Amino acid sequence: MEKYKRELRDEARRRGVQSLLHFTPFQNASSILEHGLLSRQDLEDDFADGCGTDDRRLDGYPECICLSIEDINHSMFRAKRRDYRHWVVLAVDASVIWENDCRFCWRSAASGEIIRTTSFIGGPWAFRRMFEDYETARSRPNTEREKYQIPDNLPTDPGAEVQVYGRINREKITAFGVASSHLRTRLEAEIQKVGLDLPVEVVDWIA
Image 1 (tube, helix red, strand yellow):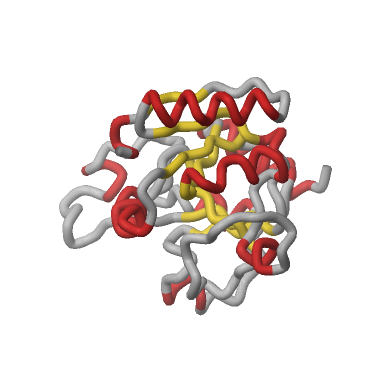
Image 2 (cartoon, rainbow, N blue to C red):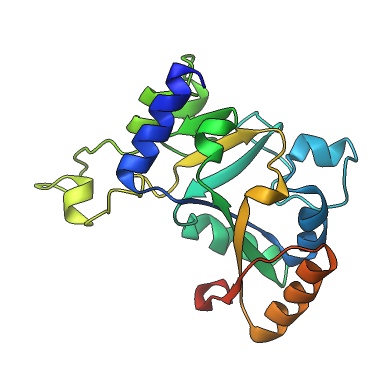
């Protein structure tokens, strides 16, 4: 393993990061169970059936899959959920951080700050910056992490993203969250079809 990958692994473990999360329309679940998580570029190249949730990809990286650390970006989810009736949230093992090639975006990947960044943001310094503390007008006289009591395993900015290049193998998926017991039953049947054993949890805020 390359030195910078070891540093990423050690920093993620030190912070207690165990999962990356990704939300997607429920109709994509069966394709994900068969092929794993695919990027927008892979979907456009017809590597598998599936529908994306961001046709514009203002970040400029359609070859990447967008995930968040330990919690989803709830404001983005609220903005997108009107487009599809049912959704599923996937938990992906944190080892993707150091085993896959990634971009560590301490703000939204589509923000001007990230787009203007010309440095390599796939290494430990960018990952650490996701957790960097600072003052803002809303947090003063405290810092953001102090005021909002942000735990060590969550980035400071709720819009922060890990962008993973290419495909995430289905073996990296550790759990699913859905909005109802009916959807859980449907998803459990799909999971059995492909011979996997993954937990499905009913999560109130997805509804």
